[in-house]
Amino acid sequence: MNDTSELKLGNYTSSISDATSLANIDGQYFTIVAVERRDYDTELGVMFTTKETFEVDGEPYSKFYTTRIAVVGKFLNDGKSNPDSRGAFTQLANDINSGNTLKVKCESVRSEKSKKNYFTLVE
Image 1 (spheres, rainbow, N blue to C red):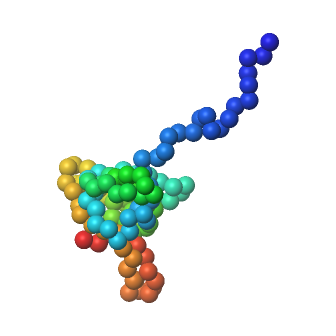
Image 2: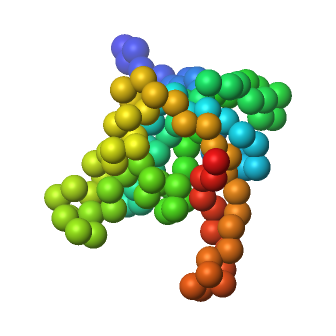
């Protein structure tokens, strides 16, 4: 007698994520209270926990992730000056994770050099 049956992936999926993309709150002010590393494939990424809760698609979120280079660069070392430091927290990330907060918003700005728009955090 065989006690096995066909498995269904739907029976093994995790619950809905407690984080969403930073793009969902572009242009809104938020206060960062914690920073975590959250890479995507080979790209460095970060996830912020915010003091505020934002409704996105009818769900409340206070964790936001991104791989936007200008944003990530404020919190993780890119490894250009020291390849061994790639992905290590910057002093800003360490200070936030030590109990400090940072109030910012993510917005599109124009690069003076390339004349292209990119997303970064502004106060």
